[in-house]
Image (cartoon, rainbow, N blue to C red):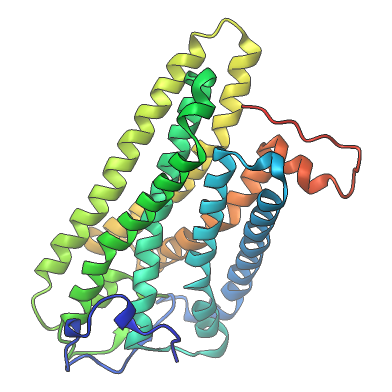
Length: 328
């Protein structure tokens, strides 16, 4: 039974008496015989994501020298990754290992809300991190005056409000649809379009709003991220010192990797759900699952390995004399 009632997401007027009591999640259609073994991979990735994200949160919150805008944004990213992974992986593992395919309608709606709203939040955090790197590299003398704690708090609030604001109407629209057909969702989790396809009413508003919301979030964020890195690249190429330029590229390299890992499978999953009829279902579902697992797993590893300050703090118990140096 789901502990979060959907009334927290929208009013009771959103619900229709024709809603089913539950749905059946298939997992990965076509790979049912390998579900048991795939679950071990997913479980390992989930454990790494949990350990990595909690380590990031612990290190940054307990080390005063890391109380800086860049690391506050990393905390936001780690928190969002924890929500994304935890809202889906336990149910996926129960499907693969225990054949617990049933999910109540309320839990399905709540899961959908968390997946899509926190994905939008993660996109917003990636944009904020690109802006942080732009200020740090292109305007280093003004970094501390531009990105104050108050500014970071306002950015975080804006990211949260945008994610909730965009996805609450989508959740209500899904809840209003009549479902009078089969209850089987050809997916590992309650993805918006996978659920909407089971409705027997007019799904055009859901279809249009989903496309518009995704295009607004991904389109605007990716454009501004690209602009930030074009300006960063121009600034780095104009530097007279090659060592400083290489250091700047190294600093931004981890962020670019995270952006590619997050957006590539996400966009593929989103658009193939609507127009990729010729793509095998198991390929689409696998990529959709990896979209919610790979970024939470890789984010702490990439930032932990590439960021000297975090790496130094993690290794300090093993090397007490190691120094943590703060570099912008």
